[in-house]
Length: 281
Ligand code: GUN
Image 1 (cartoon, rainbow, N blue to C red):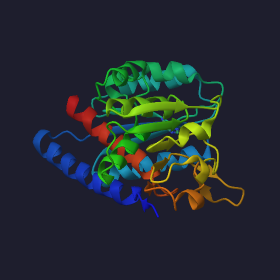
Image 2 (image 1 turned 180 degrees about the horizontal axis):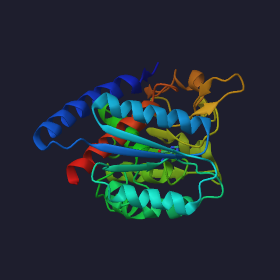
Image 3 (image 1 turned 120 degrees about the horizontal axis):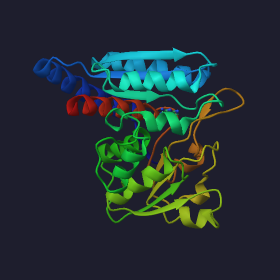
Image 4 (image 1 turned 90 degrees about the horizontal axis):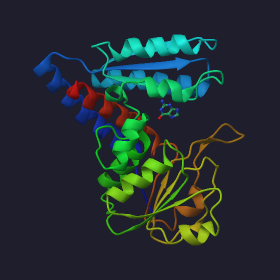
């Protein structure tokens, strides 16, 4: 039976460390790390995420501001707000909650965020830095996965690491971080042939495809470490991951549950990036 990797407990531990580091930084400099979060429209899932981000900031002693803009906000208004926050000395991190309403251009707004305040690490400048292994800001979800592996004592060097999913937010940067940690990395996606054959080679399997209970026991090598980035809502309203937990848990050596695995780590890494940004400012 696998060890359950407790993302809530590990997250709480790291947040305590950030809180202490923040207090020391404030005592030394008088500067309060500040995060601005922009949300446009009324996406209920996004509203929950944004609320949690604000609460997490308050818990570690950061300054945080949430800008809730109406659905009909125009590109020019959104750009102008980003421009203003870029030059606001009390704000060290800027996060534009995605997805944006259809009439707004995500790329345009993400490009506009000062790379020094880009705590999501979505700006091409920071994406490029990730490619070359210069980690000022780590993308929050992959960084959270790395922290879970590290704090669980999972060795990555020389291991076969398989990532399912190739999104810009998770799959691609995840592969890069595992590669920098000296893993042998394979990235699979919707067009991959013989997927199960490849995933069965994985010592470390990271799943981020957004399909409920997609990875079943026959796709997993006995003793593998399985990290589930998925967050899917079942018909009955329950949250479930991309991994069929019930069938995979008995054969894995370690596994993250959903909820309570990767989820709590994402905001924790956002806090870490915000503190890094404040220290660099
Ligand atoms: N929407 C879903 N995940 C994220 C994230 O990590 N950052 C932002 N900005 N929006 C998201």
